[in-house]
Image (cartoon, rainbow, N blue to C red; front, side, top):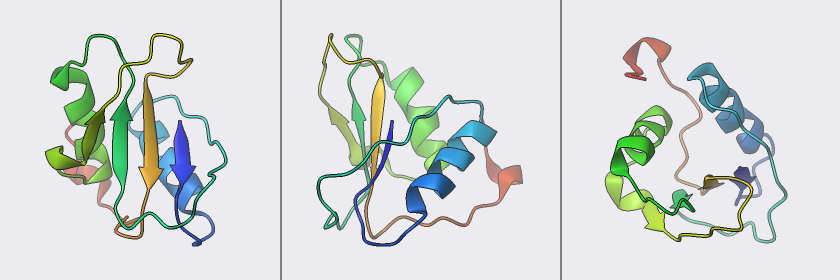
Length: 98
């Protein structure tokens, strides 16, 4: 899931497109807040394996400290990406490793 935590329109679409380009299936969901200073990736999986979350962080240009572990066996999605004001929507596809 991708959620725009800012007031900047279109961030969620740009991030979802980037993830789709990298081979991830995404769904945009509405945000209850628009005051996130920093982007975070919430790992909802039971396993919490960095071999799966690190490539997502890499694709999004995020640092490992942006990962929040929050296992949720009832979640329909494995990850929730909340975009903050630090999100950089421009990227070079040739620099993606996944």
